[in-house]
Every structure is written in C-alpha cells, then in structure tokens.
Image (cartoon, rainbow, N blue to C red; front, side, top):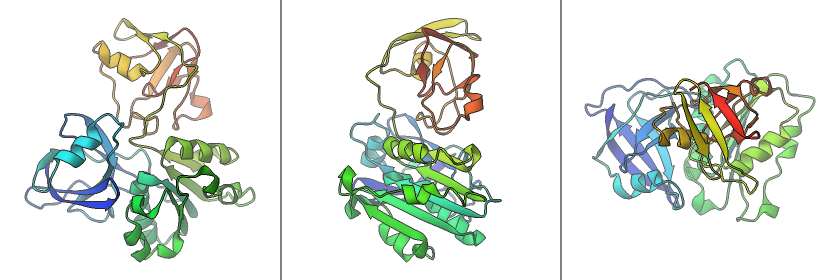
Length: 314
C-alpha cells in the first residue's frame, strides 16, 4: 500500500512516532495486538516495525522508530529523511506475536523500543478486561518512549517502569516476576526488547511451559560471537552451495548468490524465514523454534552451524 505520513513526532530521545494513513483517509486493513508492518525505508531497505496504536483504530497505523547510529541504515533514513506529507510503501499487517485470548492473565516485559507491541497489547487487554502487568525497563526517563502516555492511560495502575541509569547493577529484578512456580496455569508471558533482556527472560522462564512464553525483537541484530567459524550451506532446491563466514548470516549468504528466502525481522523472532533443515547440526540462536522442532528446522537469519556444513530445503 502507498500510504501518507500523517504525522511524525519525537516521543523520546532518538525515538520518533510515525503515523500512516490512506491517501483518502479511508480504513486500513485490520490488525491485532502484536502485529507488525513491513515498511520500505527511504534508503530502499525493507524493515518490520511493530504497530503500537489501538487495534480498534481502523484509520491509522502508528509505529515508533529508534535511530540506530550503528544499524543497517533503515532507521536513520526513516528519521532523517521521512517527513509528514511524504508517502511510504507499507505491507499488510502480519502477526507472529499474537496474544492468546484464552489466557487468564498476562505478563508483558518491554525493554527500550520493545514497548511498541506492548502498547497495543495493553490496550487490547484493557478492552478485554483481562488482568495483566506491564514491566517497562529503560535506561532513563529521557529515552523512555510514551512515558507520559502510559502514565495517563486507563491501565497506568498495571505499569511498572524502571530506569537502570545504564548500570547493570541497578537493573530490575525479574526473578520474583518469573519464578511463579506455583501459579503458572493460565498465565502467558510476552517479551520484546534488546537481546540481553530477551536472553535473561528466556533463562529465567525455563520452567514455564514452552507455549506460554513468547518473544519479539524487531530491529535487534545478533552480534557475531567470538567462537563463530565458517561453514558451508547446500541449498537443495536451488542446487547451490555457499560459504558462510563469521559475521555473515545464512540469509545474507543466500541473498549474495541470488537465492530468495522470505524474511522480515532478521533477528530470529518473527518466524518468517523458518526453513527445513535436511542435514547437519545447527547452532540455534532464535527465539521461535520449540525444542522438538530444532532437529528439523532452522532460522537462517540468525542461526549458524555446529557442523562443517548444513543442507537446507531452499
């Protein structure tokens, strides 16, 4: 869809909210809490951004973009080049991070810009009349997007906001929240934020049922690890082989030889690039696959190989 930028406003340090509408102001395709939209940024890149407005609103989409100076350029071009009145190409809403309507209560954990899908979730849960708690963890008030809005919303009493000042020793202790060993029935956990937060939450929720824990991290890049080694990937359908050096993802290597693979978040959380693993042992670095799926599937956007080679059905 070609949509117009109805407004652009700073909501925190280096974070801007964009509102998109149809050129004629007509209704947009419906979305549900946790959904994202693919956006073609001014530099030509496709990026996925979580929708943060109330899903009951049909006339607009709202996203928030953090200017990542060390990123891949998409956020910089959005913030530096896109202005109110411009047009932008936007894809249909997709949701790989949906709320479970059957749950009895919910825990929402957001770190930094990860607040975006949680805003929509909090609004939806308020409409549903479901109990929830939103834990919003940031560095300081200046970098906390939507802080005044959250404190004025009807669900402000469900909000716990913590600033660590950039000091890990002052971080919020999530263990009392996630321990809940005797009261997990009917409880669902949703987490969106930096990789460090997601890893910590994943570790602390290891005793939760796997279908009760959900992660989203659009825009969070996976850093290369010091023990990464090169390996080769055979693409069965394409009849091509490519080498994947440290610092390059399987997805990027596939694209370099013209193999088109579906992808959206490129951070191992949305599930768009899920590919059948035919041979080899994978080093899974995603937040999507269930333990029983990992022998047969891989997320090429972040995962690597523990063996010398992998064969994928792509």
